[in-house]
Length: 253
Ligand SMILES: Nc1ncnc2c1ncn2[C@@H]1O[C@H](COP(=O)(O)OP(=O)(O)OP(=O)(O)O)[C@@H](O)[C@H]1O
Ligand SMILES: [Mg+2]
Image 1 (cartoon, rainbow, N blue to C red):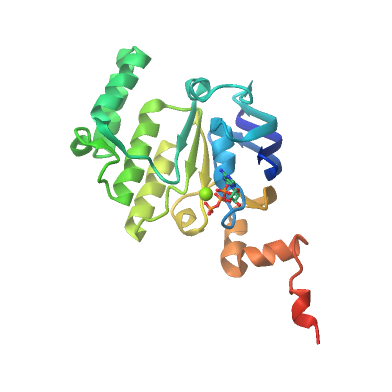
Image 2 (tube, rainbow, N blue to C red):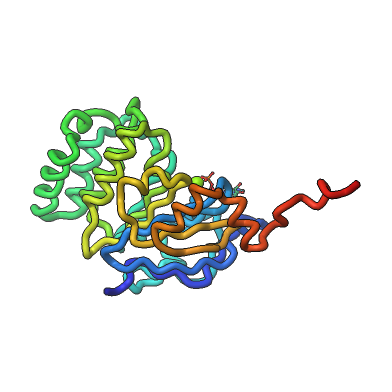
């Protein structure tokens, strides 16, 4: 199976501040990978750099289904099949979800697109949101559902879902996890960014990567999330020799 995403030696900086310090990752088509890590480790930066947010200077290589993304504009990346659900979904007052979808349908210019929209609208129970401005006044869970709807209708090759579980109650987390699993297909790779292993209780990621200080320090199966749940990120940091397990100042007489 070929790779939806292949990242090699990816570095990214804002000004003098290097945030990603050499990231390697491959997500084969058909797989869901989780990216975990403590606050400020660079997870959202990775999603921004994939999408091409202009303030980050990126070097290395990021292949989307074999096509190099570095150097391409945001809209070119989207057209190639990159979809991103933001950690903080933006509200778009004055544009209803239905109008937005109609624009996308025009751009797609084919009838099967409308069939897909109808199917996703029914599957995700989106009828009552189509007349409302995008994300405006939606609850946290409703916003995430709307993001999953947009993913379903845009049939991306790679979906990057940044904290799709944050701010959700336990039932909504289970529901969102089900939606992600439901979107699993041989023509899609998913990168799911999360702090907590909670959402992973309701889905079956093929691989879990842990990012600390701008590097992937561990990758593996479900045991990675279980270990983190048991001992936290600090233990992993110490194990990797990234910081002393004990602050040496505490040992001074
Ligand atoms: N525009 C920016 N200007 C300066 N520093 C930034 C900028 N964007 C991100 N950073 C810094 O880069 C580091 C990584 O941030 P990032 O948002 O990628 O972390 P994260 O892993 O997503 O954290 P969280 O789990 O809290 O969402 C942080 O120290 C952050 O302050
Ligand atoms: Mg983040």
